[in-house]
Length: 168
Image (tube, rainbow, N blue to C red; front, side, top):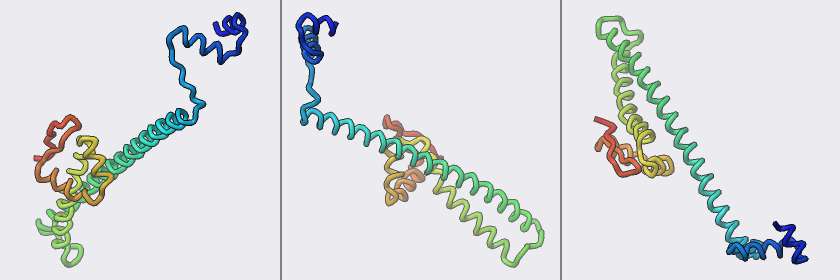
């Protein structure tokens, strides 16, 4: 089609393109103009930065989620081992070192405290609304308050605003 218009009108390709666009009712923008090119480039760059930020945030959330999950599992395994050893000492087995029983009790308390902190974090990062997850990951200074809210309220909000019960 372009070759035909070029041959009949004895014009070059850009003129044929403008002619056919006019016939079809299509408005052509000249991207060679500096202001249109700059606006287009700025929009593309802004979109690229948003997408890159979203990718980085998602990777960071995933990393924190996996770290939290691993910490919970390791804490639960440690709590199990300490509980079994404490039960053995309480049944009458000889302590392996002086004050072992007291140290076992302290270890159990530390494990319980850690689990009371990390389980809400895991629930938040698994079920929470994207805004809440992002706020938790990006604002370390707010984490204690967010964890406390989840622990004491027992729920988190989804992106749709629905309350999801995560702790009893």
